[in-house]
Image (cartoon, chains in turn green, purple):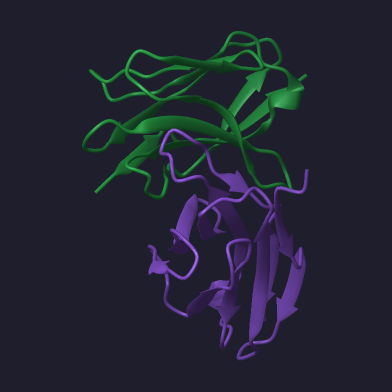
Length: 111
Length: 113
């Protein structure tokens, strides 16, 4: 079956540091890939997505590129802020079915 | 801009009690989902509904029942609550197109004592 593997957390960074959160997936066919963010006490919300190979999703300074050859969708940001502290989930969806989520990575950014 | 609305936000139950978690969406989505979120275990799918009148089991359906009352509403029922069901529950909805994202409610924090 489909699966998503995220790097284990938690991740703690200083403000303005570079962020990478690794995500790899296993799925047949050509899934769409997503990053969701969850702020404390809230539900998940879409951060960015990519729907085909080599697409780059971007939003709020975050980026991720759909790499079919390595089955990866790593999340990056060049300079994190305290307000980026949250839990980040990688997910895939294919064939109009339900989504498959990774376990989430908790990011804490310190001033 | 209501999106996905869940009620209640918080609930404490005694072991053996029953309750229903309510969820409604105003985006005309066919697909709706119930997840539970536990520390270190990410999101686990309990039940989903691909369209009005249909429901299917997810990864962890035991101890739960669901009703897709109409296109807008998808409820989750715990018939006899157990401490293992202490969790945060999220309802979500999406369009059928796999290129589209899921929209989540704010969650219900349930404690079973």
